[in-house]
Amino acid sequence: IRTLKKLLAEKGADVPVIAKIEKPQAIANLEEIVNESDGIMVARGDLGVEMSPEKVPMLQKQMIRMCNKKGIPVITATQMLESMIREPRPTRAEASDVANAIVDGTDAVMLSGESAVGKYPIKAVEIMVRIARDVEKDIKFINYPPSEEDETHAISEALNTIDKILPLRCIVAFTLSGYTATLAAAERPKALVVGLTPVPKVFHRLNLVWGVQPVLMDREVESFEELVKEAENSLLERSIACSGDQILIIGGIPTKSVRGTNFIKIHTIN
Image 1 (tube, rainbow, N blue to C red):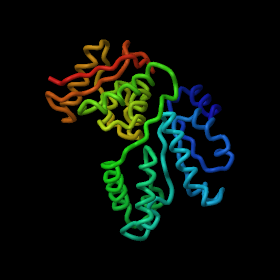
Image 2: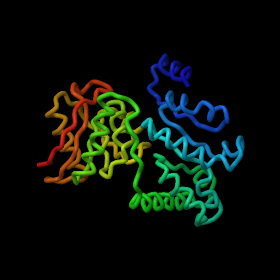
Image 3: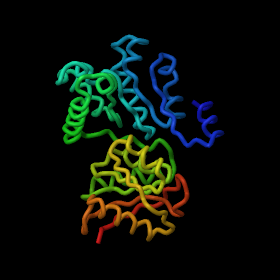
Image 4: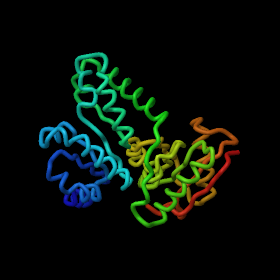
């Protein structure tokens, strides 16, 4: 992973690295891999071949928990709605499998054969969405303590407390790298996290992160006042919030500082 990241940096390629966990050697070095990666894919099918099948469910939970603690995206993949390659409805066991991955805290659930070669690709996606939405209506996620002692982690922890007390319409995370929005979402707040960014690549990446609605700014901002105004305008234009709604804004000043989150503001739109 380090070699790949070094090679990408030498080529000037700003590409995140997602590690696909499918070998016993990867499980043995899981914590180190999570620390080096930008995301993790839990490849259950390959793991089930390489290891005893009865070990895979708890390994899945362990990997998701580790990624949640670290605040990086985790994808749960392979054989989620496998029967829908041929059938128009999943089995109850498959529906439970998708639901349990979401309850465990996965950021994304991924189809493979169901949408690549299956007879019902659109229906498979629709059913997966329905399961996810239904599960998330009643779920109570686990909140983990910050994995690092810095300002960004401290602010993400604070927003979790504010989210429990105030009826926030949304949390706006101004971000240049995606880091601030990802950490905010890692707290699994009740309120929607809006990832506000002027960087197109970051806008696309944030689609992978649980609970984040990315918004691409059409201009850069310089000051705190401009940032607040841009947040208001972006929410109003997209009907995410209305006048009178209470929102939380987190970000960094100066605005061009990457991973420089240093403020949190409770704001009422007017």
